[in-house]
Length: 269
Image (cartoon, rainbow, N blue to C red):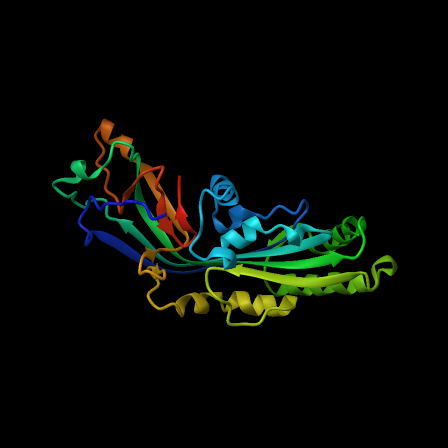
């Protein structure tokens, strides 16, 4: 579903700031709950996607897949690597003039406006230790957490700890030949690097900004029918602020029932 959004400002009054930001972390999942906040995903959006009230542009390759698929939790301990790339910050100028007819362009149920958008891309890599027998998960999780901690930055140090943890697993008598590794990847763009091991994950993460850039125009992505989707995050402000004399300078005005477009698909707030 694509919302009905209307400009209420002159589109040339936008300020655009290039960004070169990559943030990547690993998490040894303690209760098989993904750290959604690491990619800026609010809990209410998670619930709406899971309940089929919202669908994302990438389908099963993106958030629909990682949020709705649960087989990776079965008899498994998972290290999740979450990465976010920011390429551009686009925001309305403080002194941007409003369209003369902006009030007539806002429906009564539209309560917020978009003040700024951050564009880029994201990736979630699930490195899964699948145990052959029930009850082995806790032993595997305890060992991984002891060596790697619960979470940290995905860097060379993390790879070193990760490899030490795998070595320790292979040397634990009760676990020898009883734990297999599987890797699942969900992302807003395809990784150009093959992913199978901790060091290959780091290589893929480091190339994620380049992979995002290969899409061409970093400001938006078009879907199969030509509709544009920005990526990453949107900061909003309530239109109700006009009641105290504040003009709602915005990128787009939207309805809470409709949502706004971003890289996660059509998101409702």
